Image (cartoon, rainbow, N blue to C red; front, side):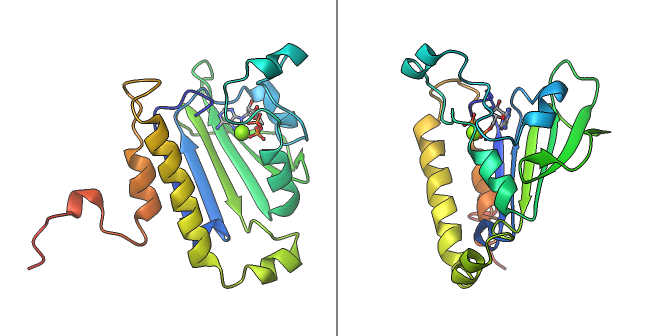
Amino acid sequence: MDAGAANIAVTVDRGGLDMMQIRDDGSGIRREDLPILCERFTTSKLREFSDLESIATYGFRGEALASISHVARSLQVVTKTAEDPCGHRCEYRDGRPLSAAAPSAANRGTQITVEELFHSAPARMRAMRNSAADEFHRVADVVAKYAIHNAGMESPNFTFIPFFKNLVSRRCVQPEEVGRPLS
Ligand SMILES: Nc1ncnc2c1ncn2[C@@H]1O[C@H](COP(=O)(O)OP(=O)(O)O)[C@@H](O)[C@H]1O
Ligand SMILES: [Mg+2]
């Protein structure tokens, strides 16, 4: 949402513990920013100390991607800006890219895929072994609240339908299926 996306799709497997993927059609990330993307405190949203007083974005500390890259087995980013002729793909671990960003097919925007979120935190992983269903509901709750809060506010084209559609696809009837006769 901070990247000005109009569509955001969230997909989770086992409540996000095995896999979560967030796809947006926002600004994308510039190729030259990819090497430092997952370093701690790397953010594009603060330039000066005084920005702290007027910050209106959701994230601003450069903490999320860095933390995830330190615990997850894999964090992959595929991104394309409007100016880029093609997208780029980069995989991260412990705050660093595993190799240089590789050109790849992409739509404008960013797709972030996290596999095995607590891979490097075995105690946490064991503790959450049986909580996939709870985690699923937590994710659905957070996504629904952001979607409702932002529906139609910033931009008339703001649509969160793919959000819900993807998120609930493993558990619920798809919206277009609702009302279809069963026989
Ligand atoms: N989906 C995205 N689209 C565009 N830029 C992104 C996206 N996700 C992350 N970034 C860039 O990476 C930086 C670090 O992201 P993050 O760890 O979530 O920290 P924060 O959002 O607090 O700045 C962001 O400041 C932003 O510049
Ligand atoms: Mg963020």
